[in-house]
Image (cartoon, rainbow, N blue to C red; front, side):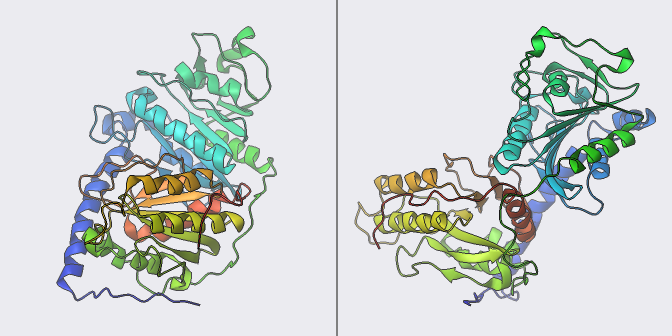
Length: 453
């Protein structure tokens, strides 16, 4: 066992200053989260409740197993734009009847649940996560339809989909009942209004354009009719229970993992650290089980810190990549590391950070964008699950699509990812992600590129 040590001193003024900076950024994030949770405002929330209806997060809470976690995705989407914060939809991953599922819930208090470009992007990302990680998809639908270009909001073919219709639904969302494996409607409230011909049902191959919706009574066709919203959520749980769903990936190596030896509070300071002084090992010491980290090639391409550990019992490769062009030695190290990760079917966490500038003096050709190509090729060919944690105001974008991508709050940074998280929650969030990716088989690509030791 190689236990990481720490050099952070809570009594150091720089430690307290960095902690304070991050807490200020988190307060700004919390303000945006409160705005998203408020939906369309007190007037519309009160009216919604007066009709005997639940808010989207209330629906999700009743759907999930009691006291189970819910990893919300992109909760403050559209912040700083003309559209409502949150994108008028709640998406995330939670456990239903012991099964991890992706949940998408429209917020009818915000423009009657209208779909805007940010809504569409959130739903597409949630659908992609469900497909990549083999997670059942549950749509809690009540939407007034499109508000702009927002097509393609349909369930994936690879995983089961369940649709609960709570109220009036039009636009693209109106086709979800016909395209889902299981459809539940709330009696007296669910109304599906279609204008255009319906597309082909990807699950059955039936061209439902040839069979337009003909309402069966006031509620329309459905596999099951619920007496009220709570009954609809009960029936949705029942559907998940009957899926007989099993994970295809291996269970955690250690079901009772030990916590890191170092306090997560130190991550608040690291989140605001000067890039030139940022130390990735300090992060790994606070997220890996028992702070146990076996470093890979520590004397070779030293700026690319890589190694092996476990997180919540799951084996994990960790790779810290600075946001700049790499040297030939660094590229070689990354290619070799990803080769081993794929050979052992080990998921990889990429810690993206600004990092210090290249060492000087150095030959002009040492840090050259041409050296990035082998590394990018190895990343693209790697088939093990990739997780990304972005630290600081990193501007470069990855070309591949990881299973999950989160970031810490940073000044001047508006990352395109699955959410900005409190650094202290990093271990929990990554643990939930690792559990989710193991719903699918974890398989490596074997040899992903040429390397030399």
